[in-house]
Length: 255
Ligand SMILES: *[C@@H]1O[C@H](CO)[C@@H](O)[C@H](O)[C@H]1NC(C)=O
Ligand SMILES: *[C@@H]1O[C@H](CO)[C@@H](O)[C@H](O)[C@H]1NC(C)=O
Ligand SMILES: *[C@@H]1O[C@H](CO)[C@@H](O)[C@H](O)[C@H]1NC(C)=O
Image (tube, rainbow, N blue to C red; front, side, top):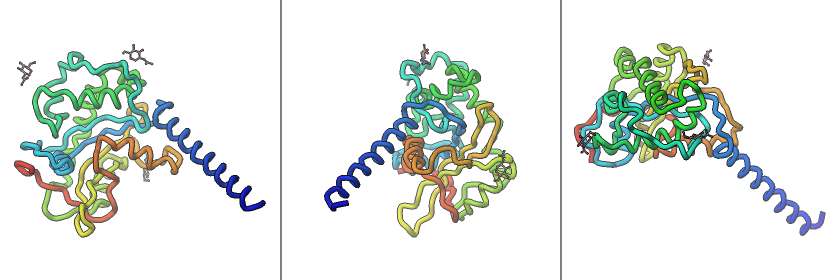
């Protein structure tokens, strides 16, 4: 081929690749609301506060709920609005176990509204989760059954100024639950610093049984796009690296 033909050809090919990538990405992110597993996400309030650099007052000193997330779907029904009335029976538990760590005003329900609209409307494909009461109720039920706070304590994994190894935490949890959790960290700000433990997620199959979080579900070239989407509410968190991790003791006031 002549050089000119070659470059036109390459350009055309690149456009095609780009087009396919965008189409596939859109398909996974928006078009297709199919999902295969749920993440039951716990977060460590002290890390949440550190991540936001917000002035959280007295964050809870126990793991709280972030949400119950289908793995690859979001905002599945924009006309299904959050309605606090539907979960009023759950409010005492919601306030204790699922507080808005960053905006701790007792009457704020923005966080729950976000979780419902982004994740709950997708989880609602399952009969067991097809109302707000069922969605939030089931998540509270999972939280209590998993009892992460009690289990970590029994394993002697407690907030500490000395570091843990990610593999030790993961293996200890896997030995108790029989499944591999997903652990998210706040990466170090500087290279010589240590990552900070942020989220512990347990995965459930569509029949609501615990399962491993590990199996790859999507083509690898889409993983990054999807992960970015999935964790967009989690600000700076990402999958923990193997190696040491800081599990920060609660502080009274973060500045
Ligand atoms: C979306 O939610 C509304 C309100 O609950 C409901 O009437 C409608 O059937 C839902 N749409 C779909 C596609 O599920
Ligand atoms: C919070 O809600 C309760 C009950 O709905 C109400 O009595 C109280 O005044 C509210 N507090 C604030 C700060 O809005
Ligand atoms: C989870 O992963 C572990 C280690 O790869 C494997 O031994 C186990 O069978 C898996 N469990 C399930 C339920 O798939």
